[in-house]
Length: 630
Image 1 (cartoon, helix red, strand yellow):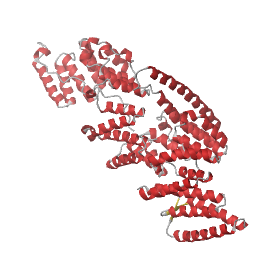
Image 2 (tube, rainbow, N blue to C red):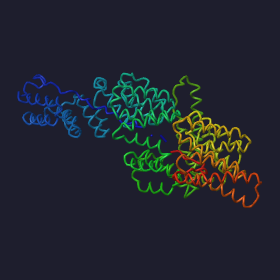
Image 3 (cartoon, rainbow, N blue to C red):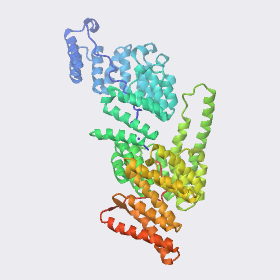
């Protein structure tokens, strides 16, 4: 799964919220205040303007020692101000506590005291101080920022916020953030629509973009992200730019424009001296299929800084490659980091790993997920009924998206459990598992792909061809490399087995044409090699060796500079099968002589080419049908 930066951190609402240093006139200081105490205040004000808060505190302390013995309101207020801006919230709270004791009606200082408690994560004390301020002063003192922070943290309920600030933008945004966290993206957008655009910052716009993304309104999300990237202020801020570009990359990937998504992220990644963890993780995610070992190493390095999703993707990638022991070892070595991964995902990964050692537990958990999906399915129907009865078509409570999230967790478990049945060649049982999950997963590409594999394994070629064709047609729109190489190969075999040879030839022609036109020739060449190998193996298994060996020759000729071990393995199987039948004398004479001529020419070319070609270990997993979501 492609990963972006989170908009969910609590907004820093206190910076600069305190008042500027006050001018201390003789009237404010009182008639009895000495001239030299007022001089200390003026000196401290100069230090504060120059942000030399340590010097200001020392000066003010001297004024206290010369004055009223620590009971001067103005001096203590300024000391609190200096400590606050130094980040020493403990001493700042002590200073403001003294001020509030001297004058219980110092509501501005009491608000500052509440802010100190918020900074110290003592929200309960902050709420107590807020309640000591009369509500009529809330609007004038700008209490909305403080209550918004408490609301974001979940320390107070929306119903506990005073009515005088209930409709303030800060409160609406904090409430929208709560809705976002609970997955109610439509409600979050509804609340954000009441906030004036001029009072939104880049965090608010980003929150809206993420909500649109969660609702799969990719055009709206992309428009907001592009708007943020075009902003002069955001263009100079590397962290904001990284966040926006990762979101743009995720959107482009979701709408099927994987090539552009990769280019956008790669260009930004190469421009950075020290890439941020999220950008690095996403770049690795794009390269993982072609460079699996490098990807695993990079994710392991990232795990300490970005446990989720680096560590979870690493473990899932091992499971996908059926390296269960390696995945378990990684979890054992990184127990403390594994705790940072969301609990739901941890459960899913642990169940997937248990399918290898304890399939019964995996089967039980699969049933529990199915029951949960049934419940969500019922909730969706109720929600749709409510929407029909209301006039508001713009927003939903996100139940449909909750189902999609549940399917994302359910699908890897289903695939792992079905893989056990597949390995035992229980194809009918595997098909029953897919049929039971059809109402949840029918639109999922991975589910449809693996169902096609199951039907293909049972030699139900017409049914498998129908599913493979849907996937192949989508691939031709999104790019041939967006599907596994086995898809066009198995589709071609299905056509051959149902006497639709012309269609099989069209697939090979389409791949050859793409090989000439596209810049990503190596990827298309790989698809073409697998197609020829599968067809060659098929024809040789049917004892049509002339055509089968010709297909193997074409596969070999498509290897540009190297011959993979597995490619040679499948070629060798076909050659040995032919030689075995030739030795038995069961082949027709014409078939045998033609195949022998082809094989002799092929072996002669092979002997010559192996002097200049290298042999690599890139695996061609023709017999591996299942894939796991990462």
